Image (cartoon, rainbow, N blue to C red; front, side):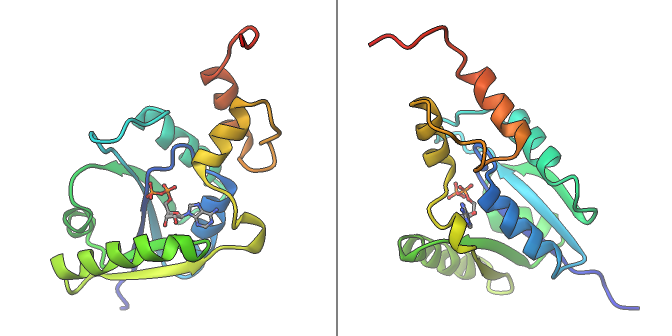
Length: 167
Ligand code: ADP
């Protein structure tokens, strides 16, 4: 019997956007199981708590039966071993992502030569989309409802609820 193949899609997902969902959908179509793993990084101040980030991702990916969401902290390659996976999925937008992603992939290969990083290219319509862009546009009252799933839009409104903006 063929062993089932599991891939891990790690990231901050602060919050998950339609660009992340696109990558998860394509990866889910390639592997038996996809674990979307939210990074708890004590060095980096996140906008949303680890629980909120997982809840938003879980809700946004609930249409994909072979996708699960969890969280991790520490070295990614250690987490992959714990998950019995040898495949890291990352998304690529523009050339600007490449240098960072290349460095990360080489570092992870140095740490764990048997683990492979696979890149999935985004759709052109998401090439400008990132969690920080969404937060920035939302903050200034711009329309982000087409960039994120409804649950994220709702939480953004709750998180940044304020009466009127003071200048
Ligand atoms: P990081 O892990 O650097 O904190 P994110 O959580 O924002 O970054 O993203 C996780 C992964 O998803 C990264 O590989 C990133 O390049 C990719 N990604 C982010 N936004 C998009 C998008 N709009 N289209 C495709 N991939 C994306």
